[in-house]
Length: 310
Length: 319
Image (cartoon, rainbow over all chains, first blue to last red; front, side, top):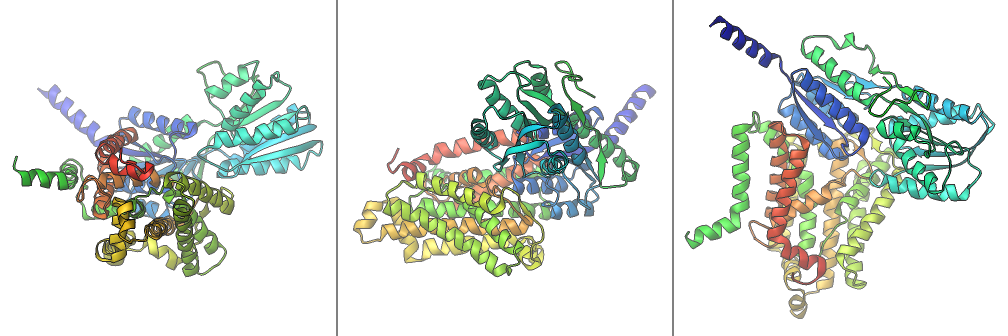
């Protein structure tokens, strides 16, 4: 009889400790957003919590509505993956007033979230730029594919400019800035196809602000029959697709900086779990960011299929 | 079943479905019936219903307006750009609204003067509006630094009621009055239901169509300006999501009140169903893909009922 009582008490305690965690990804159709949110959901379930995952589908009004709904539910804590913190100010203040802790991942800063799990984008930009220019022996011609619509990619572009100012042996032949967010692959393809045609035979390296852009350009280079090493192509983000391309002898992709999206989602949930148990957010970081390391991946350390570099 | 019950169900079945949905969520989900949450749902559907209201007016005149979301986004970035350039907020709002009316009128003129079907015209104007939005912003959103009085338009809570709800109420009353109580409104409905007959009866159908599309542009721009105020930001795709859900709300609305016809009370009911579903499913802990599937099924069901009117507007002949 007392065993049943202990079992019931155990079940009761487990029920009490289980929290409801709301996870909002801004754009689940984006590989990086989905990786972060899915890892956060898995981590929440591994810790015995309930997890509700919502997808804002890239729409700001939906993003705000979903946060309002989670606050109203109410959930015990919220994770925002690639959230738009400045636009969500009104809702984040409400969450703060209701005592619902919010941790964001790669979303920037807001006084109304505990902290943002992030990588240092300046460092990421420096790592990939120095590596690419080094492979080019700090001389030759470069094409640049930018994206100004995101804080992280914008920062990587600014670091590229700063590094380039030191190495006068590198000439930027042309730069294409991707503006559209919905049909961005087509935008990159059209822009870069024109530039590759214009500078055919004169290009030694192509810098892109994230891997998705590099994939489009890599496909174009493969269509043109370029062998690996003729044009050095780099990106940022990491993932099984880019690792496969770095391993592939037909691909021009030579390096990326792998951002640990899965680890970031998991870290955010584990921190939230501790905070819900009474821990202070200062235990994790005293600043607005909880930084994690991003890993430069090239042919020397590219992981085997299905493996990760961390 | 008695005839009057059947007629009532045909006319108000969707409203009944909304009530059943609301009662179901109230019983199943904590806090759903909380007054704050109900006001929250109303606030959330305000934007959808405003943009859907404009679409409804265009559809009443027999034309499709697929540019509403892009016009809303353009009005949003235009307004924010002027505010960031230190213009006074009434000027920024007027510029945004003026742009909406102007592009709506362009839609109308292309339809009546160049005889281009509204399906194609409004798609083209949507593309132009999107391009202009990117031209203004360079792809980078305007965030913050907006006048506090302007922000109160979308964020205020007079008497505890979110400002967008009051705007919606005023807009719906105004539009309904225009449609039902004015001669021009009657002409608009007649033009949509039987254009040739209306023309033979002496109604200036071309002018009516331009007016309907200009009104649609106005309400789209109004939604964009209100979104900018509510979110304190503006981006070229800020209202992009409202095209499909706006159409869904209008189609759902065509199944009720005046079945088979676009009507404003019906659009409100349609928007409410979409809002209640999104809110209720979230409160129940449903994952995002479940919400998408449920919404898709509802759109399919509503299209199957109301597609004849839509088909006439899109292709100019009954299907």
